[in-house]
Image (cartoon, rainbow over all chains, first blue to last red; front, side, top):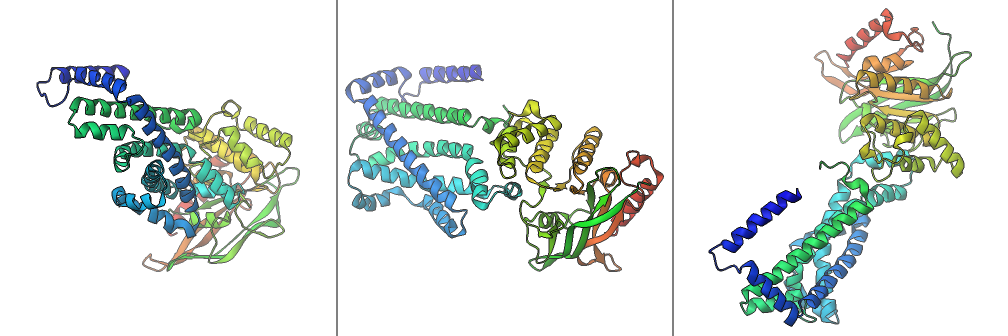
Length: 243
Length: 273
């Protein structure tokens, strides 16, 4: 598998370097931009800023989403989970004004926007996981003389914990995608999104590509890390999958 | 013919009806299991519960397990007539559900907690079952790492840890090869004979394997008009007392001509259930 990826990457790089299509900067130009971005535009600091914002928002959104999703096992809370999942189709841009009024700083505004954006997707995924638990799993727990709270704990919470990490992984990707937009809505504190938008405005194409490459690689790295955490904490989660 | 006598009623299905929407699923289902005793040996009860697909066996199974409330009627367990409720009987479902996030040992631990408060006693009981079911080498494996047969044994062991005397098994022979069917049959007989009041009800399509180990058979079906259309919900239409027929508790049962005759009789009845 690794050899296959290496070969495909090598072919891609050769095609890219030798391509006569000059609109896309060459790998060398991007590398030079990367150096200058690190030296003069604080790329590493901005990347850390954005990563921290993303992880902090993800953590808060995860806690809120899990509480809402688990609550949907009680019929009273079902409509709330359903309603929240429908907010996926509501754009963040219109919300920024309302959130600006209720938050006290640019950072808070960005976190609020990110948490909202992640929560609506997270709740959708978690509610779907909970609703797809087959009846026989609940029956099984009940035949072991568990009361309804123990059934929820064992079947829904513990039994689906590995899938929560997978949902976190998917939502991290959504959050990482939203980051540039949110940092564009509130430019306070900077961040890699602001860096990208500034360079895009000045049409510094090689800088834009360099930043995008950094965003892509950081996203892949964090995605890989979350995947490994799932394997480490929940070794059973991959046992049924074909390698 | 083995000497036997019937004593107390230990399970009673009393006039159970189930209607879902406007569809009558079960209608006036009545059945009972009585403690069959044999002088000088411990004999539990094994009831084979047979019927065509879609007849309502699973619904009655769920009602007997206390997992589904009937529209009317009740199921009672034991001489004290305890009404069915979740956990009143062990249930081994067809697909052997286990907690996938727990190891074999973890699955047994959580099942044993309610019945064995003392940790040492619990451990002793769990390890005796692991040994009995040849599962000791797999105690740290997750269910996803086990074969179908091993999962079934873990599922049975799990239920034995939290049930007192009753075990319902849904299609225990489904998908097993001949050797495994024999092994599972032996295991069921052994579990039944661990205690005089042990009662195992097997829901199955496998008439021969079920009849070979049962002491009583229930056949579920519906009343039909002359054109073959059902005119009622399902009920226990026929019962076979294998003790009375001298066809229970016998190791050579499959070689006995009367057994083959009875199987053919059941097969004929199946067409009109």
